[in-house]
Image 1 (cartoon, rainbow, N blue to C red):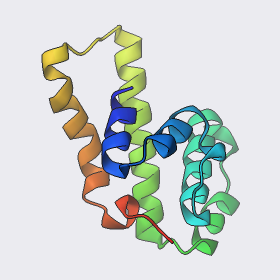
Image 2 (image 1 turned 30 degrees about the vertical axis):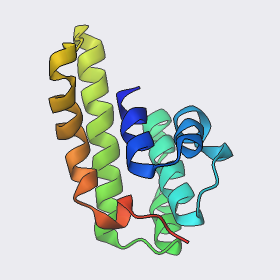
Image 3 (image 1 turned 180 degrees about the horizontal axis):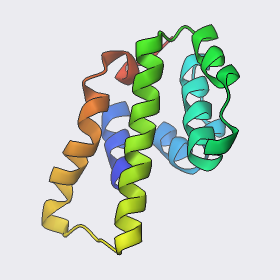
Length: 119
C-alpha cells in the first residue's frame, strides 16, 4: 500500500493509482507504459518464461536498452526486497517506513522517462 500511496501522490490521479494497484490492465495507460508493466508482471510472476521476445517487445515500444535494463533492475529490486522481508517476517516500523519508501523509489525517481506521463 505504501507504493500505492506514492503513485497516488506522483500521478495526482487516484483513479489511475487504484487501477494500477489492483489491475493495471484496467487503467488508461499509453502502450509503452502498458508494455513495461506487462514485462514487469511477467518477470515477477513467471521469471522462467522470460524470452528475448519480451525484450524485443519493449524495444518495439520505443524503449532503449538502457531503459529496458532499468525496468528489469527496478522490478528485480522490488521483488528481492519483498521476498527478503516476507522470508524473514520483517515489518518496517511505521516511523521508518518513509525512509524505506524513499530508498525503494529513488531509482525510479531518477529515471525521468519512467516517471513522466506519455501522450
